[in-house]
Length: 405
Ligand code: DP6
Image (cartoon, rainbow, N blue to C red; front, side, top):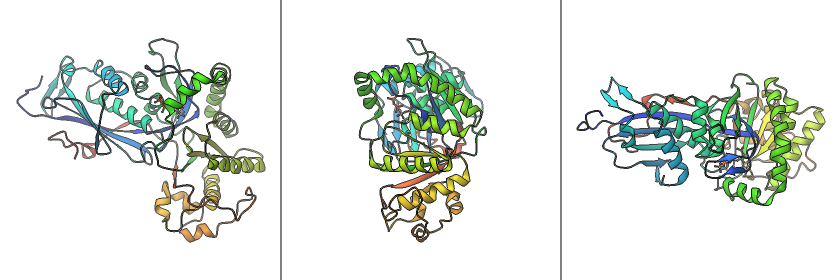
């Protein structure tokens, strides 16, 4: 090992996107290894608007593995963290950093401890797949630090053991999680269906209903469903395999009509009133146009994810949404619409007053009925890239001490 008397700290910072499933992962065949009952497909969201940044560091002076999330120290003694750490450590190889004069051998890694600091640029557990971006970033960053030679699909199988949907955050664009057959889960991993440039016309608008913690976590929600539902088995065996094939075709051909139809049909977890109002608006609009303009999808929480076929449609969508779900009167537009704000300009909305003069969408029965304040904020985004390593300036840990800055 490098000279232990020297108090060196080696670190890597990475950024990893979140993803939203368009064919859902719902149901596990193995809870510990996190093996699903069906394949799933997701769109990776642009990390400029939604991502996790994680710094991982190693030093002979660290006496235990420690982690901070959004600045607060958290316990990593849980099985999911431990699985990820164990799996990635077992694949560590020699590191020879000539510039810093640090040498670590494969064997050294067994006894070295790591410090991890992670930061989400969006509310944790708002139902926006923060665990997906988080575990993907943890595994990706540790892989870089420990000079792990495995390819991204192999890394995805490790991230999967942190949170199922995390395996899909190892790639940009459109990603398939292959459920696999192996009991040990070696073949349950993610592959890229198409990169983020393949279909870059799509605009994604997320309506965040509440940044409170999700009422039922997807883990318990899924467990309940597996135990109670024969329908779920039918879904996994008969329905999803066909949908996956069709969805891959739709993505490859940029066939929005099929993409929208499959996405909306597969999204069946709604709890809130707001979901029904959004679904009804989108369905009426799509019907009136004769061909889908927008697809909707919901995860475990009530947040709606809307995918518009192009920017023009997205501008119309934003107008309709702002009409129906305006902000509370004291909200400023800058904190009500986040992400790619240029969409607002396309929608002709540059101040809160502009929202009040928007024309009522023809899809709405009673234009006097508005749901002010029901949406906390909107995030406008697009399909985005996969994980990247960031420069030294982005480190979240102090390079001298390895403690949060
Ligand atoms: C509804 O990956 O959060 O978002 O594997 O138990 O950590 P665990 O669950 P998680 O489940 C996400 C389920 C979903 C659908 C999806 O992303 O495919």
